[in-house]
Image (cartoon, rainbow, N blue to C red; front, side, top):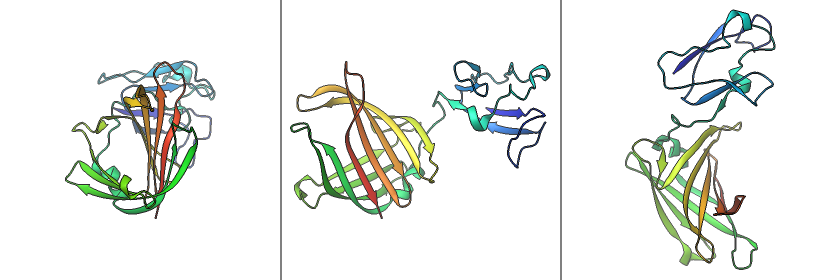
Length: 224
């Protein structure tokens, strides 16, 4: 959906926006808009309709304290159009050095060890990750990651968020379910990937069923 936002006559909107000017934005279905300074109640939510009217976008409501600012109060609550492709992972190709930090479930201590990795793109929708542990080479491993045809899953993990961070890296948040712990308890997993040319990290968060909060199970930190 393409949205045209017309800004009020009063206010400061940056060097590229002028009073009574307009700007086109493309937003996903499910996006909610809020009045500036108030995030308790959305004034509009984008639906799948072809033509949509915005209740606050009329002349009687063009007041400097009542307007929709995409730059400040756009909050995306639906990820229906958030997808990934192999291109998102292409900066990872090659060798990396780093560290694994993990929670030992037996001692409940946080353990750190050296870990290196190599990423190889495969085909048009997959990539392989090789993990190397110099202190425990018997734990070396290889994983194949495949992106679903609709771009919404990476293996069994469902994409929940894709965001460009202020340092230019991308953050992917994916979720899945499985079992974890020494007693194989059912749990929800949240996987957070930071992807950049020089920075790469994978964080796994765990929340056991019937328990409230996620905790960090492990984190890989790589650089080059």
